[in-house]
Length: 218
Image (cartoon, rainbow, N blue to C red; front, side, top):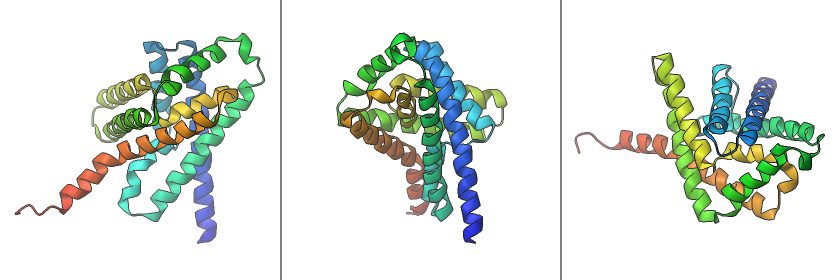
């Protein structure tokens, strides 16, 4: 039993590692086209690819922890670990270049200033909360819609809006590309983003569970 669990966790971590690499690579397009629709679309396509190929992403797993299955919680944790490992590897590769001489570094600094530093912790939690709700609907529509065009359009639109808000968990994976930018304040606000995203993604599943427990006859 322990051996089976080990290999399941390993498989999840590897899948999540690939997802981190994919999203990190597409985030480079976001850096080059910062604050434009092309940049937002670049991140959205990265998410679409991870969904199409079945790679594990932490934010996609969060709503299912309410199903009271231990494996859902374990899988979510290892997805988080794998995502970070993937983006950290990409960050190390990017650090082989001189950040000061390329546009990515300059835009990374600008992104951190505009989307992180200027907001207080409560504002970040609220924005991340809204992002979490959008991620939930984007992912679930992708899984449930019958028409492929509807699945793709809704997923991309939701993640474009999430990218525009700028405060969601994956954005901090992206900021790892500029690892030298990290400070105590950035790390603290990372946990605010993580908290807001989790609460946002759990809102609708939690309300659905609550609705199911309300007697229909009063």
